[in-house]
Length: 359
Image (cartoon, rainbow, N blue to C red; front, side, top):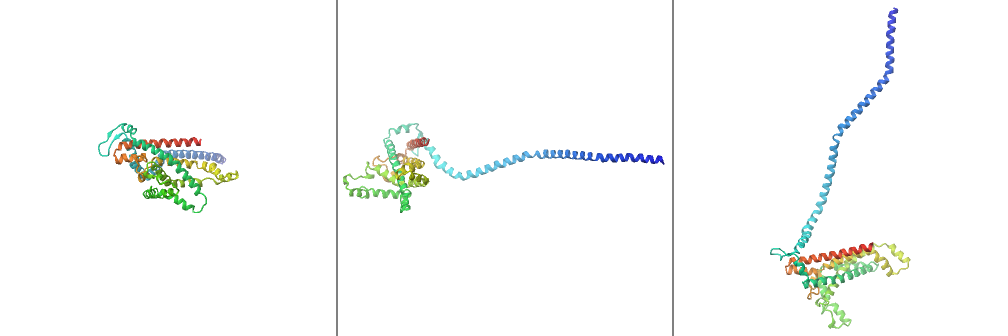
């Protein structure tokens, strides 16, 4: 019995030890299990990252390609909007300009074959009395009309910028000749300056001028250029008056108030405030008037046709005569080339002077 009990006791002891050991080892097992789970999760996450990392690069490539496609599509849309205008410019402007440049070194009458002329057309310019007369007439017209038109436009703008009665009516009346039909305006102008029954000569006769000394205007070679210049001033000053009006309304009123506090009169405010503030506007008007004066043609064609003689013959009208009257297209292209470089040189000179003044 004792033996049996002893054996039972011996059996219970190891069972008690195992229970105690199990209790002690249970937290360790949990720690091991948690560590194993963490390693497994890390390995799984790594495996996921690896497996997901493989298609990541193609996705980025697809995104980049889609952005490029969007840029290409947006560019195509933009080009589609400007394509008609660009095609029109290329066909009707750029193409003829390049063809005229090439034709300046050719002989061509518009029907026969084109032959190479080299610099023959260029050397011909120096022996052409009509070209020399047209060149100097263009210079005279430009030198006379540009400052006169500028001063008239500026004076009208300053006057009609004031609060006076009928201001809008006078603005419209001054601007009307610029937008009116040139044919109608030229007919009216010839009637006004008619040497025999024109209102201008009647006024001069009333003022006591001898009829023998009356100007013949467009019919007199000494007065024809004056007539054309006056016509150009009258027709264009309204347009540039509007530009000056925009410039005047952009001047800060505080500058005039400061000038009033300093005791400046109207003339001093005009010289020291208005004129400097209108510098950019004056530069723009000068450039545009210069280019327009070098290209004058329509009023010459409608009033004098370059006469009497060559007194009002200008470069563009001489180009017209050589191209469509004499059908010497190569020589007329050479005159066009000279006119192009003349306008380009004058414009570059004006821009350089403007930069020097600003510096």
